[in-house]
Every structure is written in C-alpha cells, then in structure tokens.
Image 1 (cartoon, rainbow over the protein chains, first blue to last red):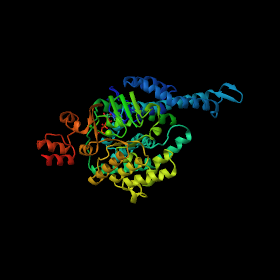
Image 2 (image 1 turned 90 degrees about the horizontal axis):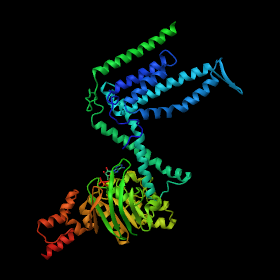
Image 3 (image 1 turned 60 degrees about the horizontal axis):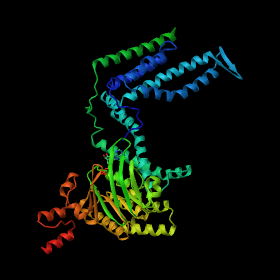
Image 4 (image 1 turned 30 degrees about the vertical axis):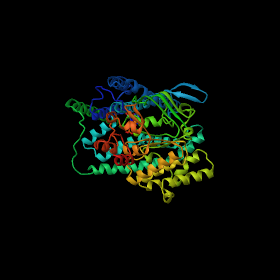
Length: 261
Length: 266
Ligand SMILES: Nc1ncnc2c1ncn2[C@@H]1O[C@H](COP(=O)(O)OP(=O)(O)OP(=O)(O)O)[C@@H](O)[C@H]1O
Ligand SMILES: [Mg+2]
C-alpha cells in the first residue's frame, strides 16, 4: 500500500543515506539559527545556500521547491498584507491608500517572520522527503527513545492511509450492491453515512489486533532491544552533529548575551 | 445474460500488468470456476465484470452493456459480487438490514424485497440469526451473510471470490447447495476457488489462469485431465481424479459418484 501521508521519496542520494539523526539535528540547528541568529537576511541565506543545495544533492529539488512554495506562498501573502498594514507601532509610512498605510517596520517584521517560518517548514520538509518515517523511528528507538513512543508516532502516521484504503474497499462493496456513490452532493453524503460505522469499527478492531500482535512478540518486555534494521552511522556524522549542537548553543548564547546588554 | 470479454488487458496504477489479453465468453446459465495460483489475476478479472475495474484496453460486455459506459451501481443490477473477505462487504447493524441493503439500493418494490430477503435467508440458513449483528457471528456465518446479501439482489449473474476459503465441511456443503440452487434457477455462477475438489463437484466449466492469461478453458472433465498444465499454475488435480489414476482407471473421473460408477462397472 502506498503511504500517501508520508512525504518520503525513495531515491539514492548522499542526503538519503545520511543517518536520520544527523538530518534531524540539521533541521533543529537550522531552525535555531534562523530564529536566534543575527541579521535580517540569515534565514533567507540559510534557505538558498543550505537547504536548496541540500535538496538538490538529495535529488528532491523539484519536490522540495514545489512543496515549500505551495505550503508557504499563501501564508506569506497573508503575513505581508496583515503585518505591513496593521503592524502596531509602525511609523515609517512607505505608501498609503484610503484608510490603510503600509509601514516599513511592518514589512520588516513580516519579512522576518515569513523567512523564519520558511526555514522551519522547509528544513523539516527536507528531512521528511529524504527519510522514511520508520527509519527515523527505528533510529530514535535504537538510541533510547521509548519504543512505545515511536509506536504511537508511526501508527498515527499509518492510520490515515489505512483508513483511506479501508474506505475505498467499503465503498466498492456498497457500489457493488447498487448504492450510487457518484453524482450529486446529496447522493455522496448519503453514501458516506453507512461508511462511518464500519470504518471506525474496523479501525478499532485493527488497533486491538495490532496491539495483541506486538504484545505477542514481547513488545513490552523490559529488556534492551536489538535492532533488526541496521541504520548506518559514521564518526564523521557524529562529529557533524556535535558541531551543529555547538553552533546552536552558541547562537542561543549570543541571543541571551544580546538581551542582557 | 451473456458475458463477453475480449482481449482484456489491465494494468494497476502502480504498473503491475495483471491481465495480459484475456478473451472469454460466458453464456447464460453457465457454471464456471476460475482457478490458478496466487496473483494469477483471477480477482482482477472478475472485478471487471461489475465495473470495479475498467479495462486498460479491450472490452467487457454484460449482456448488451459495455462496462465502460456503466457505473458500478448500474452493473449491480446484473452482477452480484461476493467479496473474498466478507468483512470488506458488511456494514449494517443487523443481518437482515445487511441483506435488505442490496435490493433497497436497486430500488425494488417492498413486497419483492421482502420475498427476496426471505428466500436469501432461507437458502443461507440465516433465519434465526436475522436480528444479530453480522460482526457477532463467526467468520463462516459472516460469509453466509455476505452471500445472502448478494443473493437477495436477484441478479442474473453471481460472482463469488473464493467462497470456500476458511469454511468447514458443513459450510462448504451449504455453499454447494446455494450454487446448485442458483444454477437451478437459470443464473450464471462464476466462482474463483483454490478448492479444486469443490470446483470439480459443483461446476461444469473450468478456466485456468496463469500470470494474467487464460491457459486452459473448457468442460471440467477435459481440464482436469491436463495434469502438467494445471501443475504449471500450482493447481493439483482433484483428489478423486488422482485416486482413479493411481487405480489405473482408463477414464478421467472428477466426481465421487462417477468414481463409484466406474468402479462398479469394472
Ligand atoms: N490494488 C492493487 N494494486 C496493484 N497491484 C495489484 C493490486 N491488486 C492486485 N495486484 C496485483 O495484480 C496481480 C493479480 O492479482 P489478483 O488479486 O487478481 O490475483 P488473484 O489471482 O486473485 O490471486 P489470489 O489467489 O491471491 O487472490 C498480482 O500480481 C497482484 O500483486
Ligand atoms: Mg484473489
């Protein structure tokens, strides 16, 4: 079954083969840099000189740009309009019409917020495009994140595509018995009603069955588990992660130092 | 109502070529079994009959209808389709409602619905269970509910996907009776099955599929004789046929009654 909910695009690339934790660390440190780092243009620079090149290296450039634009353009438009017109305390008027006037403080604020969100969303997008959710979860639980937590996360990621598949099957069954699920809106809604019951019901049954299945495989046994799937990691990557952690700490330190002075 | 399948090719959206040019004609009143290994394309083929799948190329005709021009709901007037897994098919609160659902959707008169539902419950021996929730029944009985819910639609063609899988002997017996009764009232019955004995005892014609193609098609007695061809798609001859062969019978038998008759004669 295709998991339509995950963004993951299976390709061979240097970014795909990085350890998931490295990519996670990268995402977090880029976000910290974007939010706490110096300069108005740092987030844009991070986006164009780090994230975009990395997405190209990861052979997901097209999807990366497409998705980030599609997700963020409406938000940006909204932010710019709202903030440049209504930013409280804006004094430097750039232009005005009717009762509105755009202030440059507002524009700067909107720009700052928008670019930070851009970095935040797109660094996670890069992670998700190049990492299968279960690889990430496997790696995290191998490193000591409780298995039940990763179970909750992965099963939540899976439940929607599963329910979709289920809904299609049930609808097929209903259509096969003469229920017209196409056509006008009322028809469609009417045909959805009998669907809700079995859908919820069978999902609950699934959950219970899965719980029994993993229980039967000693899921809750309190021992240290070994991992079947070997997720490659290297010294180099570990060093890289430490560097990123240090950089993040320094950025936060810098921000605190600034606010103290 | 005749079924015409011509040069049917079907590829799933993910690119799997499940049918590679199937041509089959099934006249009114046929009793046809489709066999073949897992993934041979049996389910894919029958899902074309009621329009759940549409030909990538080729033609599927049910009577004078081209399935490409009809909705699944329309085709439900002509084809009753019993899913492999009854749980994919049941969604009502009681057995009775479940059985009524089909004829209601088809817009039958109340009297007719009542008669059809009664007959379907009778045939599947579900009378006492009519007010229970289908999900409280055992899988074998859920299968019966699925069957009843299709029988009540009174379609000229009934398609069953693996009706006997997971059923005990009593239940298989009951399914045999249902098949015979449908045949008796002049309907076409098409069943996919892995149960070659069930197939030999209840059907007249057999279609053998392998990797998206029909490799054998003919009267049961001819098809069961093709041991090598059957083996190539992991289908064994019926037990009784094998026994007869080991005993050195000169004729091919495929039903216990025939076996006994030949045994007496020799
Ligand atoms: N929804 C689907 N999407 C993609 N491929 C599919 C889908 N359903 C079936 N297939 C593939 O199509 C081929 C034929 O499948 P089909 O279900 O028709 O086989 P079958 O003969 O019914 O097998 P079985 O005896 O296991 O029921 C198989 O290779 C199968 O993997
Ligand atoms: Mg099948």
